[in-house]
Length: 274
Ligand SMILES: C[S@@+](CC[C@H](N)C(=O)[O-])C[C@H]1O[C@@H](n2cnc3c(N)ncnc32)[C@H](O)[C@@H]1O
Image 1 (cartoon, rainbow, N blue to C red):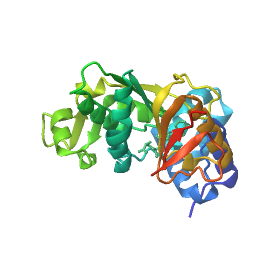
Image 2: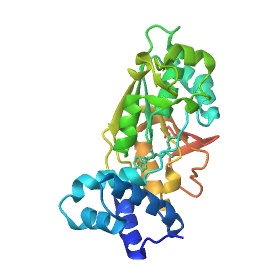
Image 3: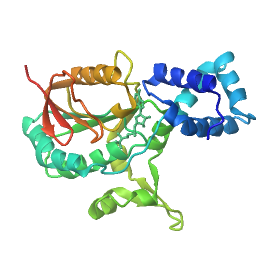
């Protein structure tokens, strides 16, 4: 049972909705309360009411708003999550992009703590080793400053290592000098391949090139209502070159949406050429 007042819950969730597009229904009340409590404790405040007064009724709001958004985002991710997408990239999209001959541009548009773009970077770096003269760039973005800071640091708990293929672990991952520390770090070669930026996908404009070859926006749309999903997908499409790929998460759906995309299966879509 949650003790959070309905009006406090409504105030917090309507702010989160307008700032990030994330819909938090009353079914999420216990989760929201837990996250607010953690944030209040981190600031040395006594309770959520005191925290909400600080956030909404004082001039400190601007700074804390970023932290409140961070606290309300769900950053669950994994290396090589939804393996079929990486199979598709390795077998179809990446060879096709290399054939085109020009540098390929990939964007992980809700990258969380970085497992997704670093998985991409490992795959592409493996591919490029035998292909002199071809190059690629990976942009990775998220709304959460906290998640992005973790992504840049590139240190992960050891229990996230399992999905990384063994040969890639040897090539690209570093264990802590003190082997009793249950963490690993992405090696410098792969870290250097990913550029991180804070981008809020509900904004009207994205500071991103308009000729992306592949955009991954996986496991984010489920947090938005249909109207916001459509706006975000339309904007993402406007940053894809014709023939480029949009890859969503398996739980995301474009059912009933009119968008300039052809469905290829497994939540993979291709931007129509006309
Ligand atoms: C569940 S994670 C998915 C991570 C990764 N794409 C994956 O599938 O493993 C969703 C991410 O979307 C981010 N997010 C939420 N609202 C956003 C927004 N309006 N703009 C950009 N990113 C957002 C969250 O911070 C979170 O890191």
